[in-house]
Amino acid sequence: MRLESEAISLVSAELVQMHGLVQTADYVRALMQAGDVPPELIDTRVRAREERQLALKKDHPPNFDIILDEACAAPSGWQSRDHGSAVASLAGDR
Image 1 (cartoon, helix red, strand yellow):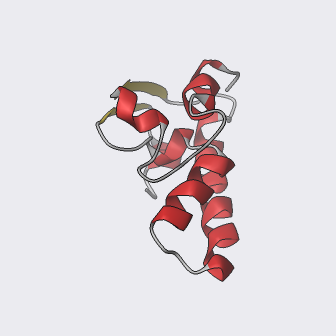
Image 2: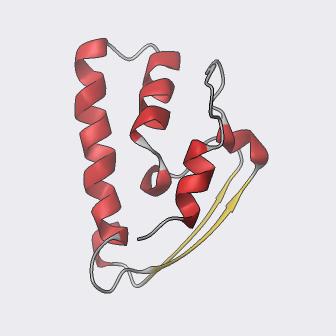
Image 3: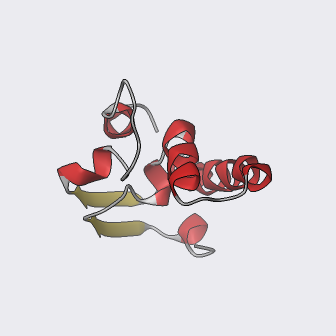
């Protein structure tokens, strides 16, 4: 993870869950809750994901090629009104 901020190119294929660089805060929370992470640690982990995502928001972000299985849209055990929100965020601005 420490190399993500210095990378010029990233490639990822995900079959089970979204890559951490494209996980929304709600998606991360759902993963943490489904994984029985203690509630007091969830916000810290959400902030850590958001800090990682800064690599994609800098002036010259790395090229990021990602292949996602449709199963990535809804973490196991997550009941949400908008399972596609994490996928939709991929089409947004860097």
